[in-house]
Image (spheres, rainbow, N blue to C red):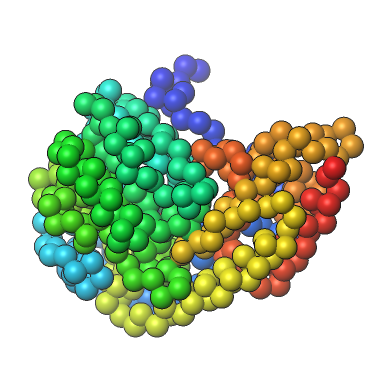
Length: 398
Ligand SMILES: Cc1ncc(COP(=O)(O)O)c(C=O)c1O
């Protein structure tokens, strides 16, 4: 059957082959330690689950306004005022089915064929495909490990053309865990001030998971003159262990929010009513579980970095937040095990699966083939056992 050209432009997920192999091994009774997970390994806090159940009991189970219930919009605005120190009204907020949906709504609302979107790499796997789906062009700008995978202002300046419509910033980043501090953002802001047609999509989905006492900062907080050009993507998935509830937010210019709401009205309508009520509790209720989770990730990150420091010939930019590390294994490329040669991150991921029984995501999926992404949303025991297995597998390569 003929499929649309649009579908043809989507790259099949690089993790699919890895997952298929993991499942095959599992069916044969092999225990796989999965470093591939992109979600916290904790349950949704009880107060949030109760709020969801209560909304069902109260019969709050029908269509809501397309752009979300006012109670949730108000809770989002309070969060933006408190955590970003920025003004926010209901007209600035669209509630969608997850951060991913919020991004897609934004791309479909802003981008025309031929428009360019600057995507610093390593990037979250979905950005280029979503931009392609909007018939626009991802312009990938490599960021080097020595710069901590942070976009440099010179690289941004060089990538901007008359066709540039949008820049994507993701801090802390999936896959690197790196974050843009005040100085880095100020330097980028100076470039953006010279290019008034360039808008910014700031994907802040991991903003509550920050380490080393870092304080949250984003572009709109460091440069007031850019505020009208910034669209913030956020949500409850990662901060409150609510990945399955599917609630995300788009925050920005009211005219764009209205247009994106109209777009959403013809595609999905409102996000699930029950999830919206649970999210009101997530944002306005007890914040202790979310803070404790971030602290646990920090402890794990410290341990993971210690372990990685003990892996021969592996380097790793230390994460500032989120729950990923993105070590560089390129020293192992060209090495052999039997008839097998490791020629890149896909080969290495495949080898680690077969010889170490650990699942990881190859860096190629994030636009950086030298690296492998490990998520440490795993128990301490699994982290120790998994990296032990990685070490033993690497020792087999010569
Ligand atoms: C950088 C980044 N942005 C957005 C999302 C989407 O989050 P959600 O599950 O809310 O759609 C993810 C999820 O993995 C992510 O890593």
